[in-house]
Amino acid sequence: MLFTKDTLCQIVLPAGYHTYVSTNVDTKLDTTAKALAIIFHAPRTESVDRVLLSVAALIGTPTYSVRIEGVDTNGDPDGTDIGSTAANFSPVGTGMTTITLGASGSLTQNTPYAIVISDAATGNSPSTGVHEIDVRAVDFRGGVKGDPYVSLSTDFPTTPTWAEQNQYEPLFGVGTSATDIYGTCAENIDDLSTQVSTAGHRIAQKYIIPTSFGSRVKVNGLSISTYLQADFKYGIWDTDNNEIVATGTIDSSVGAWGATVHNMALFWSGVWLQTGKAYYFGFELVGAVASAVAAFDAGSDNNLSCCLGYPDNNLYTYAPSTWTVVTGKCSMAGYLLVEDWDKHGIEMDHLTEGMNR
Image 1 (cartoon, helix red, strand yellow):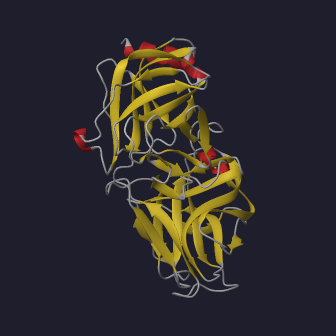
Image 2: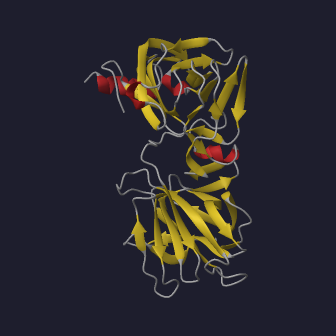
Image 3: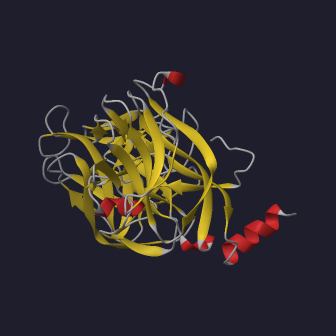
């Protein structure tokens, strides 16, 4: 991420991932000996009653067991269901799929757990080319290991050995309700299907700046992941369609903007934005060639609860004079660059004190 000398911090817009190294990685569960584990740390202490998986492909009508287990000292599933959570899962289509657990499982903050998907030993067993699914993960870590991650066993269930693939981030969710989910609840990463192709039309991320920053913040730049093939300008608009700030026209051929996804920062003289008020952050076409914001496709608005700013965190398109919501999608990599704020509230007082030392 780039900063000017005046930038003190960044505010992450949904979903806040760097997308320019992402590649889909699908794991095929097509034999009874295969099991997939999604290893994650619980972000808070609570009971969860559902798991979400991104099903990339489906053949036939397989049945799987899905449950939450503890994790051993090797970082592998320990084989112990945390609370009778096991449920049979027979997918009926692709995309982000919710599995209601057999019972709620209690998670403890900062403790590792494993979502384990394996043959259910009932219904149609996984069989190559007959009954199988592909479970999606993504590689946007550039080979760097991280958490959460996926692990695959090919000798399940008898004393299974697990092969960690911790450079891949699984697309999954865990939740307490349909609108309270955490994880990476995406059907697709870098989705470019939402496009505009007419001069004066826009794609932008809607976001409400948290009131924990005080009454207002001074923004001097914006970064958002885009696929731009026409001349454009970055801008900020309010819900009354007032243009708060806009860059000058940028030639799409400068800096190799065209025909690829970029996450680049543009800067301007600082402008004050009110907290607790909705704004649109994005681009407006000056030319007339199809262009897009790289999107996090959650499949539904409810699944966007795993992203910042929910329930008002969708992408929007604009055609004069109407903003239209894009269901189930938010920007993949958006940042506001902040140079000042009204220093009210505990969070900002502490940050200011630290900056002055």
